[in-house]
Image (cartoon, rainbow, N blue to C red; front, side, top):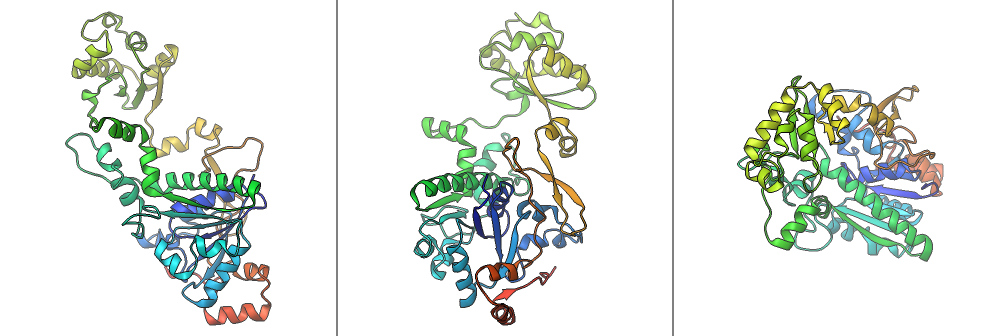
Length: 406
């Protein structure tokens, strides 16, 4: 879908590279500009003492890209980056706004050399306000500051961190969507646009229903334990073989009678303690207890069969290992094969991009690049001669294939 689109990714860590990975899967040429020493995520497993050929965390966000290593603290390094931006359709960065402005690499500095450039700034807090230049990480900007961490804790509990790059990759999706919208506009008008994505704003949209309630009413109910749910039948229940099921009840009273039939307790359908949503809410602890007893008498397989027979929306509460083996995950295209960086023809499994285009080549276009692997190729594409390339490598403004320190 994006074949012929060139993206310059001046970014490290996960959120912006994740957006670049999506664009690469969709066909864009993505040139990753790395600092001396490489993207820190190249060292993700070395940091915890694991030495492996492929790095599934780095590879997930960087598959199919090209890598050029530039020292943008040098005049020559910044000059090359500006030349790359001049040749690009998209410039994607998560460098803090202040540093970009001082280097002339902000949107105002680059649109003068490329008016059609779609410039995506992905930050922790956005481009305006007192904290615009603060460093942003998803556990802080997305999870903590947005209210997600507090809202998610059941009443009386303590904060806990989000899982690795959870907020980063949610923001990757948002940034990729914004870039594609701006590319459509640029195609029609010939003019680019600044696209601003932030971990904070994406988190507020992700929490949008709760945040809308907070903004409208000025208050929000807390996250409650299982036995205190406002809608007790919309809950989690454990089977006799120690599997958890997620039950989703529709609005109103339409699912109460079918759920009673699922657990073999038709006698409860007209029970005044539970026969209406208001009554179930009032007697939530008792209602959940009755349902616990009913589901606890069945195996997962038995419960699944009965839930399907009565058209109840439900899902198993799976581990990551179970999700990886789930036939529906495979059928939905949720797992793809990524070529190994070893270059020996082998591959390994990795998560797919979030959107599928049936009939299109919408998967990984190659392995993740080695550090500086394509520096010479990219420089040659800018018209640099072999002698000029050798001089740039000698000066340290450009690196070529040297492995970053572990």
